[in-house]
Image 1 (cartoon, each protein chain N blue to C red):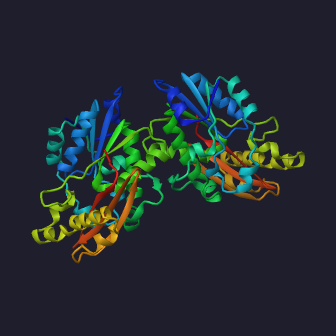
Image 2 (cartoon, rainbow over the protein chains, first blue to last red):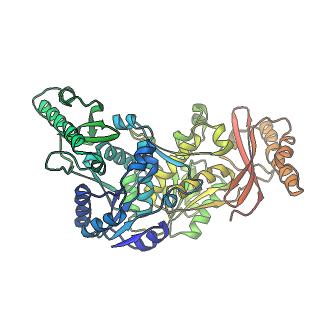
Image 3 (spheres, chains in turn red, orange):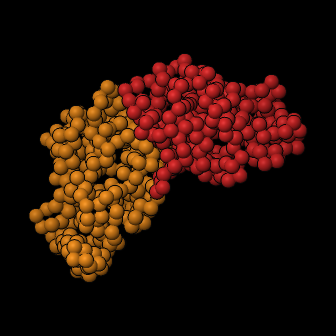
Length: 262
Length: 262
């Protein structure tokens, strides 16, 4: 695996490649990312993973500062999963002085309302990465379901020629969805956090029985106050999504109510 | 020349093409467009002209309604100038129901401040056309200098792999810059409009003599009240630009103060 830091070098490296898969990441790679890398490896001739903690999508400076970074460990994970090129640019390679073009996706749902500017940052960096890499397929995790909705919407609206693949959430044995932020939870916080996947599972059961998924999930959060609990439509798929805060750590999760992402 | 109305058909037609030039137009084609078509014809293997009166870039409904439309005449002009494909989609082909992704370029200058939302519409439709056509080169006229600045900026910021070519303004014998809106001027209005190129020429003379280009142009507008007179930096080129209104017709023009666009 080759690590590349500049757009110009990456473009040179990709010249003539006809089937490139892109996995955009912010590093702190875990089994969720591994499943994306492996799918990309199976489905494409060449696999690029980007490793960039995108400042434009953080609405809280403290969250950005606390985001875990370990490039050596990430490079090992990516290499083991068959990634060909790790694109790890510095901040000013993607946002040079004078940068001032933003992609805005309307109606980004509760997660958008809850984190002002977040999806503008996500949308802008995705359009940039698609412009640099020109992938045939790009890979996202279902855990960030509303991000996937936003990316699918901008791809359709801006007529970008890339297929957005969304793969199932990977969970630990206790049910917690894998997230780069989980490493910041202590044992007590982690026990508290388990209310989130359990509440979503209750919501899914209620929905299957013809009941109110949102109300059932809300009443099962075990004292956690959610940023939101909402139903999200992702093309043909209906999802129940929620975000909670445990101390200063914000966790999101969701379950499928109807349809199939694959 | 082939006329194509859908994105899907255009994509099929362009599959495998490696060097496509794109000339985005809103029709009502004149000699200014002809110069763009001819440059595109010389420099590319295949030339696509788009013909789309982009509702998203009109800040005034009356201006949109009054915009001249004559597809048969436009198709003749494009065909004579060597255009291979005329892409003339209906409005909802580019803006289907549920459309909601916008490209915003900050600091779009006086023309941006003067027409709220205008450059958002221009930027969005250009990103869409670049996504559909994937041109190597796209062609714009210097008459719309601030539009060219916005397009160059979004191409750089979003890492789109397209070369933005800007060609010199084409003028009638009396000095008026060619514009699709000129057909709406009666003889008296046209005589009044000539103050615009003359004032810009006075500004350029003043600048060459070390004087104040903006003040010289302002004082030579012969009673016309401009929306703005301003100096615009277009990469290495410095331009003196102005917009005036004659009745309900808005005209823009500019001259180069320093540098070379070609």
